[in-house]
Image (cartoon, rainbow, N blue to C red; front, side):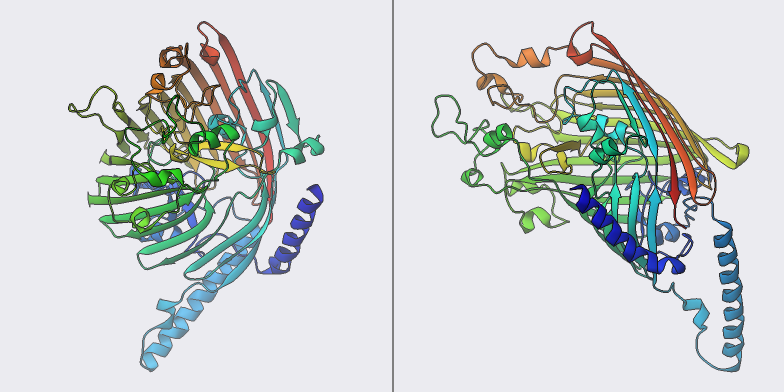
Length: 591
C-alpha cells in the first residue's frame, strides 16, 4: 500500500510540474470554483456584508465564485500574495488597460461592440502542491465510541491535508480539481487514550494517512451552478447546523443552485458508503426475526407496510432541496426538505427536486424531514438567525405506541464590531441549539441520518451526522470570538457547554436488537429502554482556541487547542475526566 501511495504521488507530481510555469494567482480567474463559507476567504466577505447592514445572500455554505461576485462579494485572497504574483497582477492590469484603450480606439473608428467589455478568463491549468509537517498530542480521551463519534474525528483533523499533489483547470464557466491528499483522519481510529505523533515519526504518520479529501468538477453560468464530486457543503449560519452538518470535511455529491437577487433554489444529491457491520446487516436485512414471529418484516411492523423492504439492495442516498426568499436586503427565509433513501435504488419520486414529502411514495425505505430557517441583519453589524427542524410529530389522535415528537431548533446572534484593529474584523457569536431524543434516528442503519465515510483499507469508517454535528439528544450553548483579516490571518477562541444524552445514532444492543423508541417490545427479558435512556447525561465544558497566520505568500503556520472538562464521563454518574488535543503545523504551498 505504501508503495502504491508513492507511485500515485509521483505520477500526480509529474502531471502537475510541467504546468508550473503557467501557475496564476488565485484572485478572479476561476468563476466556477466552489467556495465554502467555512473553509475559504468567503467568510471575510460575509462579515463585510453584515457590517454594512445586509444579510448573507444564502445559508448554503457552498457557492461558486461567480455567484459570490453576483452578490457583490469580493472573496479575499486565500493567503498573502507573493512578490511575483503582485508583479504578475500589475503587468496583467497594465496589459488589460492597454487592450481596452486599443479596443476603444477601434470602436470609435469602426463599428461593433467593444471586445474588452466581453472578455472572459482564458483557460488555465495550474499545479497543486503543498506540504504540512505537523505535531499533535492528546490525553484522557474516551475512545469507547471512536468509530461512532464524529466529533473525535473533527478534533483530530488538521485544517488542511498534510500533503497535497494534483492539478486544477479552469475557464470562464468550468472548473476541475483532481488531487491526491493525505489527511490525519485515521488517528481517531488508532489513537489510545494518551499519545503524541508528528513529523519525527514518519512511519506512524503514513499509517494515519487516508485520501482523497477534495476532487470535483463544476460549471457556473448565468444564475446557475452545477458541481459534482467530493467537496464540503452545509446549510446554516451557526456553528452547529440542524439540516446539513457544515462541520463535515466533505460529502460525495451532485449539487445544483439557481439564484437571483431575491430568490434562490438549491438541491443536493449525496451518497454514503453502503458498508455495514455484521450486526447492522442483520438489522437492515431482517435476517434476525422478531421473537416468536416467523413472518416479521423487522422491528417496526406497524409502519413497515411495504413487502418490497424484504428484498433490498446495499445503497444509501440522501437528498436536500430548499428555496430561499429574500424580500429585503435585511431579512431572508428558507424552506427545505431532506430525504434519506436506503435499501433501494432511488427512483424519480425520490430524486425529483421539486417534489415534497417524498416518503409518501416509499414508506419503509425513506426517512424525510422538514426544515425552516430565518436570518436577519436588523442593524448594521448584527446578524440574528434561527432554525427549526421537524423529523416526526405525534398528533393527538395517535396512540402511545407512535413515535414521539422529534424536533430540533437553534437560535444564534453574531456581532461584527465596527472597530478594525490591525486590519482585522472582530466578530462575536452566541448560540443555543437543541435536538430531541430520537430526532434523526431510525432502527434501520440505512435510514439513520448519517453519512458513513470509509477510511483507507475499507474495513471501517466514521459516521458523520447529516444534521446536528452531535447527532440527537443534545443541548449546546456556545460563545465565541473571531478575528479575521483579509490576508488570511485568523484567530478564534470559544467556550461551549454540551449536555449529551445517552441516545446515539444507530444503537444496537448485544443481542442484535436495534435500540429505538419501541425497544421494550423486542428486548430480551431483563432489558428495557429505561436502562438506556435512564443513564445520566454527559456534561462537557469545552475550551477551544485555534489560529492560522500566513508568514509569506507560500508559508502559513497554524495551531489549535481543544480541552474538555467532562462530568458523568461515559454516562457514569459522578465520573469526571479531562480531555485535551493539541495541534501545531506549518504549511508550505507551491505558488
